[in-house]
Amino acid sequence: MNGSVPLGRIFGVPLRIHWSAPLLILLLSSSLSSSTLPAWAPGHSSTVYSAAGLIGALLLVASLLAHEAAHAVTARRAGIKVEDVTVWGLGGVTRMGRAKTPLVHLAVSAIGPLTSLALGGLALAGGFATQHVLHWAVPSAVLLWTGWANLLLGAFNLLPAAPLDGGRILQAALWWRRGDREQAQRIAGRTGQVVGALVAVAGWFELTHGASSGLWLVLVGVFVSLSALAEVRRATLETALRGVLVAQVMSSPVVTGADWLTVDHLLDEFATKGHHSAIPVLDFNGHPSGIVELRRLSAVPPARRADLRARDVAAPLTRCVLASPEDTLVDVLERPGVTVPLRILVLDGAQLVGIVTGHDIARIARQRLPGPHAARARAIG
Image 1 (cartoon, rainbow, N blue to C red):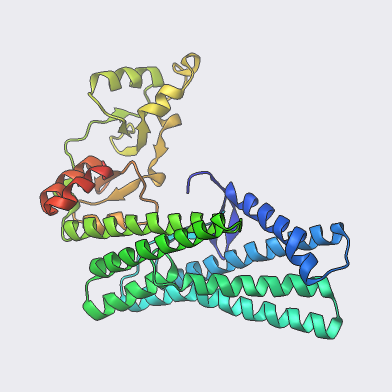
Image 2 (cartoon, rainbow, N blue to C red; image 1 turned 30 degrees about the vertical axis):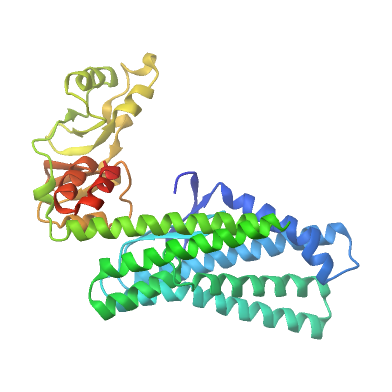
């Protein structure tokens, strides 16, 4: 996710924090310390409420991490590659590959909300015990709030609306019932669009009646609706590309550059090789070593262009999307880390034999999609 930074690992999975996550902690902490905690545990100082509010906010973020970690661990145990876990202002996101069977898809999807519901139950039990046994009002209020928040999080995620976990569960059930994953994904996505719109309308209603929490619902509803639309479009595209091999789509021969050339020399080559935004670069043995973007070359200060080599500013091969000509295009697109702009380097052994870009996929998608959907394929390019 753009705007996120790495922050270690959780259960072996890279953890990233989006810039909006501290804002989430600040808003939750402020709401707790200014209204919720004084109402649930009156008679304490503002310092106590501020400290308890911060602890409560951090507990909820930790709960979000546990929710996403449950997805990640279950996916890895099922043999699905997990790219990373990111916490951001509206919750958490786990980037991973796709399940091969409906049962695995169901297990990976359901474990997140089940974890939230379990944490909610534990926090509520701890809150009641702290209140009635130890008589600690403020810690009890923090635990009770954390418990209810986790129950709400788990219940909300079970709504049958992709990209929420409930939508994934619906997709798994439809996939198992009908045997068509893309059709199931489209139905779950359409449901997500409706549910997202309803949540946004409910938030707007709250806003117009003076409840500031309505803004949060509006943001969540819009996010769900737009993400669900992306799910529908992706499913439609994958239906069109089903069975297509990388060899049928790739552009060949490939325009390349030498990775030992200086930046100024490679910029001159870009000028003579047509309208390319990026080109693969080869080492002395003629093997690909990465891909370099014109914008990155142009961003190098003129005074350094004669000293830096292309390999110094290129994305290394380890960060590139690689495929063989015999791979199916859908399988490659399902891999974690495939981003826009799309560039897939096609290798036959150690030799670069082709490249697949968004334009290549859009071209074949337009040929295979029905009329109303063909125009949407242009967005990939």
